[in-house]
Amino acid sequence: MRSDLFKAEYQAQPPTESGMSLQHHKAIKYVVDGECHARQGAMVAFRGNLQFEVKQQGVGNFLKRAVTGEGLSLMAVRGQGEVWFAHNAHSCFVIDLEQQDSLTINGRNVLCFDPSLAYEIKMVSGAGMTGGGLFNCVFTGHGRIGLTCDGAPIVIPVTSQAPVHVDTDAVVGWSSQLHTSINRSQSIKSMLRGGSGEVYQLVLQGEGFVIVQPSEAQPAVEK
Image 1 (cartoon, rainbow, N blue to C red):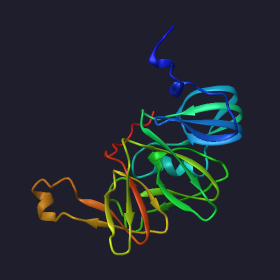
Image 2 (image 1 turned 180 degrees about the vertical axis):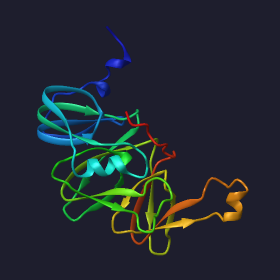
Image 3 (image 1 turned 120 degrees about the vertical axis):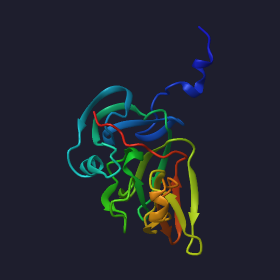
Image 4 (image 1 turned 30 degrees about the vertical axis):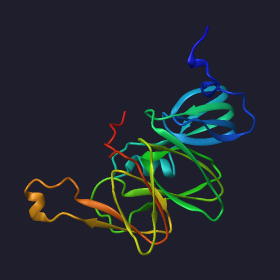
């Protein structure tokens, strides 16, 4: 049998070491030898002796109640084997965090992460009730995190001289040391006339970067 389908880039290779890696730009492979954490329902295939359990505590509870309306929770994958994660054919990326690093991620963009990473739920400063992306998870420690992005990401440097405004529905994550606030760029009078659709933006100031996706996420319907 012959087909481009059988190119090496599409083939699942034997595991060489434990942990997370890109299968390709739409999926992440995790060789589990103990435990990993992942977005509930993100598993698309596995082989080996693995068990999947819903995580009821910590970041899972936060993600489920997030103002984004994403209806997202986490699961623990335990045992020995290989598992592949993906979400709606979104682009996938693996980020290595060092001990001194701190990264804030929108809950809807978390795909999987090492259990060695610590996480804390925080609300965007000055957010109030303005839209999506207001509750986020701050990851710290040494390990890897797998992210999804609806389309090719845009990584924008942030400097003290050049703050960046981003749509709260498009933001994926940012350097945790950045200062955040909410900007309203539309007057009440304009809103009463129908508005431009660009009412609130997340403002990031300081030294670091912000990641945005080229789509405005819509609330997911929880199953």
